[in-house]
Length: 522
Image (cartoon, rainbow, N blue to C red; front, side):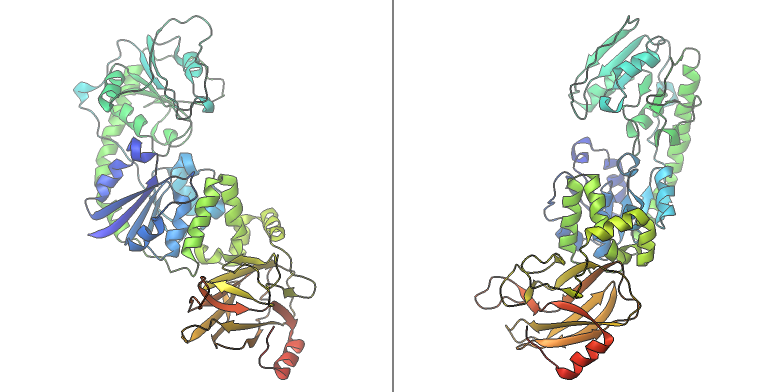
């Protein structure tokens, strides 16, 4: 059996809402679960777990998936509409190398439009026996007040159903307790019963069995298992007109849809509840049969998901940045992935022009000005104390006119005005002098390799690299990669090479430099 890592939201560790899918995966894979707290920037040994896995399934935590693609792992992403529907296009474009399974048609179409592979499935629970369906001698409503801050609260339920029901059971257990006022204004003609929490699943189901109308507690859902369980009992489900509710419910056929804040008049159920409840039960009966037929196809899709091309990025730094930016809120996460637009082509499988289209003109301009502009003398003074162009992998400031790379990878970012003039990049570098192992240097400008050469120990070696015409873009990244990093005697850091300032020079000046010297020391 292949080893499969299932990455899930920490909240589901207690709610068990993804367990039905994990049980299916265990039919074919050895499943290791890892629960992520998106509010925490550090997620322990997630990267090590991902390296060991043969397949990775990401349930709801889709912001992490591009890091697994960067490792070259077959990555299956299962997003949830209620958690990811507001994500920008760039978020989905980063995941083009992943394979999607979508429980929502709206999400399925969204990711397909962004060039992603997606398989649409519709989950259904097993329906009860027909003889065990609820009856409708009275109208008894069950309402779990989970998100009153979203506008679905006891006052709204009272407004819609108070005049037509015999009883409302209020389960007052909000996901986030903001102290909502449960007072119902005006005369009440129905019985109101309440609970705060259930000691067991059986206690919850006992109360649910005494009701025949179910009000969905949230504005939207990722799947809507509680809704489906209610439909499977033949209950009348009343839900906000958003996915996935409106992807299962045909209004006044097998359920009823309303709009939060849309006026919502009284819903009169008497005389229609039995018909709607039976239609709900019947749709689950048919749907469950289709779901069972799809299970092997789902397992085959996961088993045969293509591996991504290994992305040449520092996975630990990238994963940490994804976690820390997302934990600071969606706005900060979006700002982070936009700031990385100049290297996102590897993830999107497209060009920088594709990325620019995804970001949009205004955002590209904003991104450009968030990256410092190159100085007027066309230099990137990386040896200076407060150099604004340094991004990843560089050591702290030290005297000497150079700066070390800690590890094997470092980047420099800058913005510039593109020019048709042929230019050269000039710098000097030397390898760490430790064990005598041969060092090799690669320099990449905007995803195009411009230098691949050995880097000797000892004195600095001067490099003059002629750039392709049009190599400079509005926003640029220089990636520097080495093969060897060692700890020099008396220094606790793992270092690979040190570099002088980088400078762009016209071709004619570059030729003069080339003729005058073959090596230089800053």
